[in-house]
Length: 149
Image (cartoon, rainbow, N blue to C red):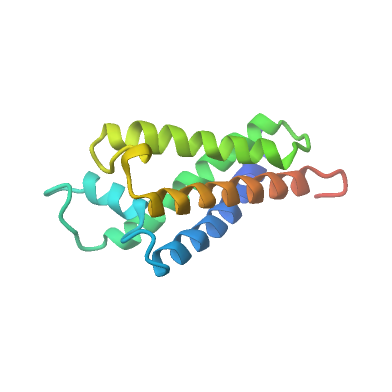
């Protein structure tokens, strides 16, 4: 189980980096004014939940990495050392997206529900989660291959 956790964490780190690239590209294309992880951290830091705060960008990036690595670890445990179709990783990531952007994030009043949010932001976030799930599954599969260390 510990090996699966570590494999998932490694896959989660790689997948989060790939997803972050999609998010940065979406921001540069003007599809979303700022990154959701930064908005989440902003709301959780002391002070007014919607006012920018010093360090929120770095804190948001660290929180996003931690969240992606943690959920990658869980995926590794669920895979139990087996190779799993990439579609399962995509489904896993889209479940994370739905529970986050239709669930706890709007529940905390940080962003509107995905169904009521800016289409551009949600297009980027869905694409980012598809990339996360694909990279996560492929990375964990590679680490679970019989010839892997």
